[in-house]
Amino acid sequence: MERAKKGYIRTEDIVEIVQSTEMQELLASRNTKPTISIWTARRWLKQLEWRYGKTKNGMYIDGHQREDVVAYRKGFLECWKEYEKRMILYDNDGNIISTPNGPAVTEVRYKLILVTHDESTYYANDCHKTKWSHSSDKPVPERKGEGASIMISDFLTPEWGRLKDDSDEARVGDAIDIFESRSQGRATGRFMFDNAPSHQKRAPDARSACKMPKGPSENWTHHKNGPNMRPGRLPGGSIQSFYFPTDHPTMPGWFKGMETIIKERRLWPVQGLNAQCPGFKCEAGRTECCCRRLLFCQPDFCDHKSQLEEFINFRGHLCDFYPKLHCELKFIEQYWGAAKWRYRTTQKTNNINEMEQNMIACLDDIPQLQILRYANRSARFIAAYSQGLSGAQAVWANHKYHGHRTLPSEMVREALKALSDD
Image (cartoon, rainbow, N blue to C red):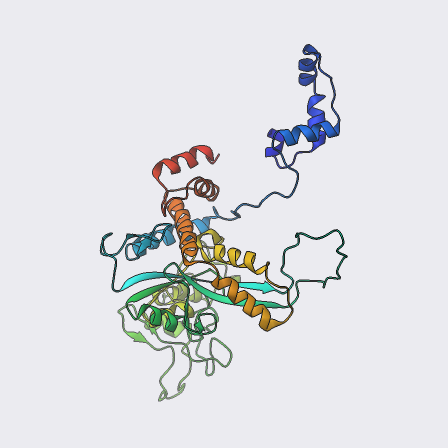
């Protein structure tokens, strides 16, 4: 058992253990055969309920305890607690257990509904590798590779399952329009996305000191052939344009440059500032060592939202991002797994239209109650992290307990005891 815990055990290991000094002394006192064969070792392992084959993978926990990931996760968990107060919560049987107006209310106006987003890819040659076959069956030539593929971008809610409205579906239409149609304008959506760089991308006119010149520039834009940068805000709260007025006597419409922008904010030091530190490697803790660092630390620069979040907020809904490396918090990941298990049993085809029909049928085949249970499982992971468990401890606790959205305190204590971090 000790050898198996380190990763790998062989039948030869059983033979070597029997031949060890301690075992030889024990066997000699019992007049037992001093050695065993490989075949005997295999029989012993089978009788002790060991099986040879591929082991199942657990949840990936690489990077869960990384400093930046832990810091973001703490902020995410605090927001989750506040948002959950506005959400309708269900048990694993689909019964309401809590609402914004109390547990007895069954109809709530202006509630908060969780909407989680993700992408998945389906392949033409993605089918079961093991199946029943007759002894008379002959080998059939197979195509190399995974074949044609279809990528789907979908939205999932515990409330309705897939976010779709009649014949329209969120992956090809406007997800917010579909959400508002389904909720009849009586709910706010909390749209959740993974922490991918594409989701964190800012608008083309977003404020950024990254490429700003220090002095005035006639045709400068942050993105090539892009729009002018949106105005900033002075310390007093008034609007600050980053461009000279069009009637300026010498530089009409020119970009002002970092020095002028900082001077207008009355932050320019007497000794002046360089455009940036060498290699933009500023001294740790410094916020005013160069023009670029000073502007990076300004509230209207560092609090800028992504383009995706700005759009969703503009439509009157909430946008948030899951912590990096925490796919267990996205219940849509379990939904993908269930859909792909069904997809692998469909008729194999290289026709894109037929593939799409099979894929949609598999997605729609997953019951809403099953999706709700996926959401509750992810909520238990959130509850585990909220109570101080690590990734491995959260997996252990979720495996042992799956009766509700939250983990009881006694289960948390058991997880801490069973998998205490050294």
